[in-house]
Length: 441
Image (tube, rainbow, N blue to C red):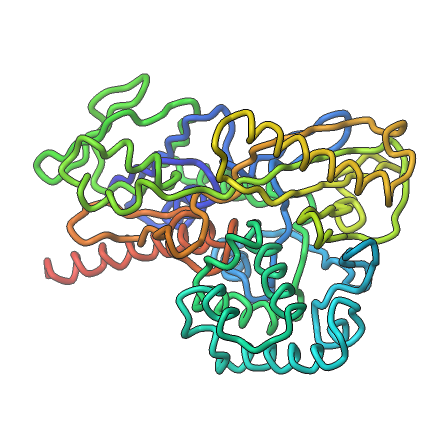
């Protein structure tokens, strides 16, 4: 069996790593960019390791990576963010982030009675009896809830932080999705971890795993341009090669790009419900210091302006030169603008809010900056997980391909969904192969 995997991001590499470990399966991973990893790529500059997005993993002990570590013999280290060093800022006041029952009782974002109420809600989520899972959206649940405004704001802020979206969009996330996500996260003994060495630690091992099978190939800078089906085979044309024949194809690229590629094929109609999906974009502000400027905490979330800053180097020492410090700021972004000028002004305001947060808690940061990178529209998920968008299943009725990636159905959010859907697509293909063999006997 010969497999084509279109997309060399986390999902595509995960699927390929599983399939390349199987006998009698050969394949090619096609990636249009010069580098692998998709939106999780990493590069070094002046001794600092910069990630396109965060390499934080939520609930790693309940994460798909745990299964991949065992299945593929991956070796990596992670370090938990010190919960005592995670704070919220509200109206200029710092308070412990309510990450667990202990900090919920310590936090200043809720009154004593509200804390009791919120603890009860968390316990209900853990027990899978919270009513949130029965509501179409978080907004509908909050509108019918008799919780205090501060409790409702906290729910919005938590969902914003973990789904990388604005509070307005947080209200549009499915209640079932939120309940399942926090059921896993609240049960986790390691709620927030960083992969030491960043995503490259994982992607490099997946690439190595694929390369161990001489029947597998990774083609970078080679986008697939067309795909047709003839006599039960898939015929692919790329930018540099024509008429490449495969037995099965796995799409591991943003859903919107899949829809565009299949626009003039018999499968267009089945993909139409997914073509207008919106993506999750954030402003990313990375700044590396030649020395440790200040370390008042490891993570601060500004509830008033919806921006947060992670002191990445406080948890992952591998990303900085000796004595250096690396901060990563993230701002949640709206995507509803009347024109480009309004968008430009909005992004500039977010940049100023981020720098104001730096000014407040990292004095003199400007004079010690060795590296700075600002990405004003960084896509961190190809599909924003709100009710008006539809996540693509790994398999669509009447469509002969398989799908994976962060815009597909899978466990978790952001990178976790890329890993889980890539693993699921590979397992689905292997199961189909077994079923075909069984029928042939």
